Image 1 (cartoon, rainbow, N blue to C red):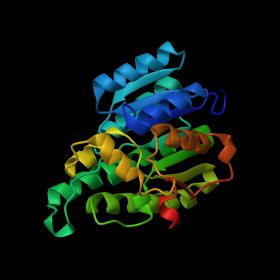
Image 2 (tube, rainbow, N blue to C red):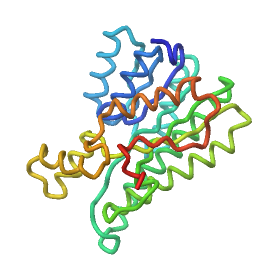
Image 3 (cartoon, rainbow, N blue to C red):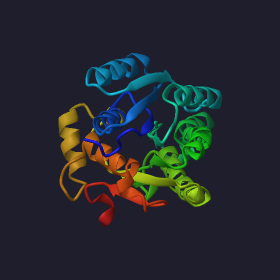
Length: 257
C-alpha cells in the first residue's frame, strides 16, 4: 500500500477510463493526486470519492491543449501540495476515423492539439517543479498505434507515434536531473473512448463488438483500465528507478506478431 507513498502525481484526463483507474491505484498506493480534466462533474466526483477513501486529491479544470490553462494549473498544484513528483500524460482523444485524404485540417489539428501539444505543455510546465524536487517520473500514454500502423484514425496514429519519440527525447534531455520519462503502449482497453470509437465504426451491439475486438489480441480479450493503471504505478514508483526512455507495452500480445 505504499509503492508511491508521499509522491504527488499529476494525472491528465483523470476523470474517466484509464485516468480514473490510475488515480485510484496511485492513491491507494500512497500518492497525493492532482486531477486534471475538462469533465468537471466527473472530475470533482472522483476527487470526493478519493477523499472518502482517505486519499489526498484535488481537481483542476484543465484543457491540456491550452498552454495558459496548463501553466496555471501546474503552478496551483505545486503550491497546493508543496511539490510535484510524477506526471501521467493520459489525456487524449481518438479523433475522426477517415482515410488520410478525407481528413480536414481542423480534424487533424484537434487531435494533435490534445494528444501531442497536451503532452508537450504538461511536460514543459512540470519540468521546473520536478527539478526543484530533485527527481521525477514522466509517464506518457502512447498506444500500440505508436508502435505499429493500422488502416484507421490517421491523426491518432501520428499523434501516438509522436508521443513515443517525445518521450525518448525528454528521457535523454533530463536524465542528468534524475527525471525519468517512459511511454506506456496499451492495446484495446475497455474505456469510453474505445466504446465511442466502435460506435463510430457502426457497432450497435457493444458486447459483440467487444468480443470481436478481443479476438485480435492473442490473449483473446480486451484489456481493463486497471491493466494500465498498475503499469503506471510501477513507472511512478522507485521500482522502475533504472528505467527511462523505455516503452512499456500492455497489449495482450497485439504487437508480438
